[in-house]
Image 1 (cartoon, rainbow, N blue to C red):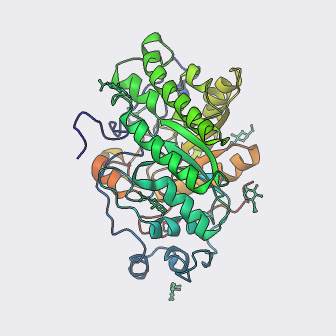
Image 2 (image 1 turned 90 degrees about the vertical axis):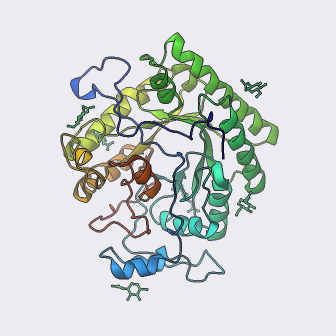
Image 3 (image 1 turned 30 degrees about the vertical axis):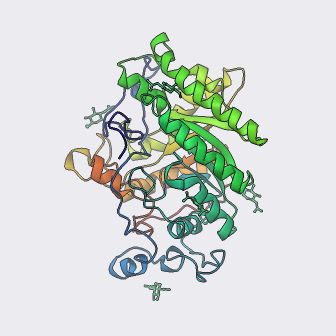
Length: 392
Ligand SMILES: *[C@@H]1O[C@H](CO)[C@@H](O)[C@H](O)[C@H]1NC(C)=O
Ligand SMILES: *[C@@H]1O[C@H](CO)[C@@H](O)[C@H](O)[C@H]1NC(C)=O
Ligand SMILES: *[C@@H]1O[C@H](CO)[C@@H](O)[C@H](O)[C@H]1NC(C)=O
Ligand SMILES: *[C@@H]1O[C@H](CO)[C@@H](O)[C@H](O)[C@H]1NC(C)=O
Ligand SMILES: *[C@@H]1O[C@H](CO)[C@@H](O)[C@H](O)[C@H]1NC(C)=O
Ligand SMILES: *[C@@H]1O[C@H](CO)[C@@H](O)[C@H](O)[C@H]1NC(C)=O
């Protein structure tokens, strides 16, 4: 058991809405878009792994993914797996958390991660992780190695502002080990911080993320970023180091210290309709995040860290964002209007997310657990058609 003084990773109040720290130029950008939290502790249903999939398929109306989602055709060679014709490599990237990767209830497995990588490799050449607990970095790198797929992973370290560096250091050490074991060939970068500044300013009642009060938190994060840069240097490897936060919560000083920034941009939480969501996401990202980065001397590369649409809510109160429902049809609308258009525009984004996350639903309710393209059993959600346009 971890000490009660140590907050659960990424703990936050689900369903909360965060106002933008500064007045927005236009009304529709009045509200900040925030991220859906990922690396939090929760009960994980370990049963959602390889092996239960085929029986699920038999009893469900979902598209038959049993060949790919049940893993390799040859269990001794994960690189031999049947491709699913419903899947297309159209997504720039996917946000991914292996099942069972939250302390203290680690329950992930290489077999399950191999299955996920086999499926995701048919959708994208890139995934991003949020944290490094429960050996998830090594599991993903091992799965890429065994499946021999063309996949780049952006590793993550999910520090918390209030634990005196405990979570940061723990994750840094396993990240270091994974990089030493697997090398950098399949690593796109190391992302230090996920919604760190959002959590810091909301936790301390601060409105301006670039104020002196907020900068106290930014210095903690900067210390972690610099420490990761030193760690990589000590290994003699050259990897980009980045930071991820809600789209309106980047500290300028933090962004000025990294190679890339990843911004959560969520039309759902901004109460934008499904029809308007793709254009809104593009505008918000350009105006809030790309513009900020371009104004900095180091000009960090900017990505959308998360964007997507929930397919249902566990309670009636969150079933609609005021403009549109949480529904498969609206996720499809977002897919149809965002994915190929963002590809054509050269936007780097990580679709949120690969599969529904049961622990989030149990812990937070509402729409939190229902953002997956796939159900928890790794079947494609019934009614979802993956857009067909090759990503670069
Ligand atoms: C689904 O795939 C399984 C395994 O390949 C196969 O036995 C079954 O007939 C398929 N079902 C449908 C409806 O295609
Ligand atoms: C982490 O995963 C890798 C790859 O499966 C494995 O070799 C290693 O032993 C694991 N480490 C721990 C501490 O479980
Ligand atoms: C915080 O961590 C540092 C070393 O990382 C240690 O020297 C210090 O005593 C810790 N402070 C508290 C309050 O635990
Ligand atoms: C979005 O709509 C919900 C429900 O209609 C409302 O409770 C919430 O305050 C709105 N949030 C924003 C950011 O406008
Ligand atoms: C792509 O670029 C066009 C032209 O700037 C813009 O209208 C559109 O919103 C963008 N779409 C996406 C998904 O990036
Ligand atoms: C791997 O994927 C990247 C990104 O799409 C692409 O640029 C590269 O050509 C691919 N490499 C191979 C060997 O297919």
